[in-house]
Image 1: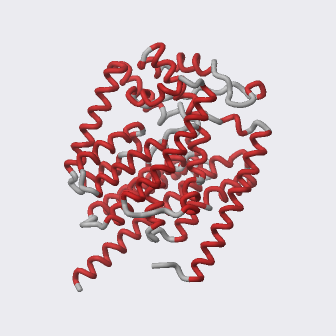
Image 2: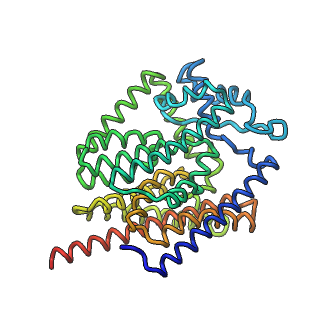
Image 3: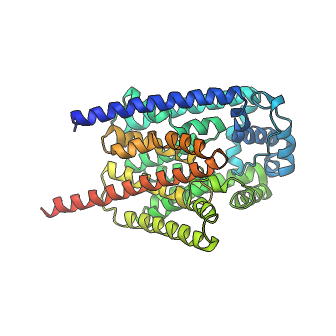
Length: 413
């Protein structure tokens, strides 16, 4: 169904607003770069990937998780820009299982700065290619300008800026979804195992598969998990794998100082505790976590025989719900949702309010909170992304409930 003339006018206005906002952000970024403010965190996560590759080759994969060795290697790196005008960079920990360090080994060849530029260029190319691949696999041809909007969004920009690897997570979630839709259940589970690179993204997806008795998918996941674990043991030994687990647990503790800036219920509790009693703040956050988990449980329990679109909305709801309850959840973890959103947008399923909230909400909110209080802007921005995630989750859950009621009504008729 094509949009009405009034709707088309709204779309054009919102698209023009998006262009203006992106140009404003570009000007801000250029100014920040000239002042060397942008350099401070540039390639932060990539730095940990690069040194992990160096350490794995020179000292063995188990040494990747040694804080002292990481500090030694990272302190020897120069900043991507204006090293002389910046403070020394803090050490970045790398908690991924040893087998995933293999992805970083080629980055040693071009060197640190050239490798960083190659890494972000590769990630951007893969993102564009995969959005086209995912959409075409489901019979959709995304249009040029809307596709540009989905690519040039704040989660992607920050993912590239930090040198993160959530594009790999996007590939795994996308291929898991495609295989599930094609009834290739074992293959679907194998792709899901790839998300073990960030296992905190998995709990609600695995819960949903258990509820819906997708045993072959679960067996495929277990087989993939066994391959990942066996490969990790072969590379780093049991001690190395144990060290990676220990480091991953530390990410939930005091090792990570950015917890109040995240987009989860934990961050809400940490920020609320400044205003209200700590116990009450955690009661509110815990209630939110339980509510989201119960809602996901209900959606999978009542899934029935969903259409292709319904299954994609269900996976979207489950993943974004997971991000809100995960203990470690930065907003660039939203990147894996983009292929699902592009499909839904191309199919005219995604509401204009959700589309606008995703494309316009983050940059507008970022500008506002920075202007109001630069010192706490990262905290406020994270809470805004929690609100965006909950809004997206509520839309998906409502859509699924409404769709099920419509299907039941048609069946009874």
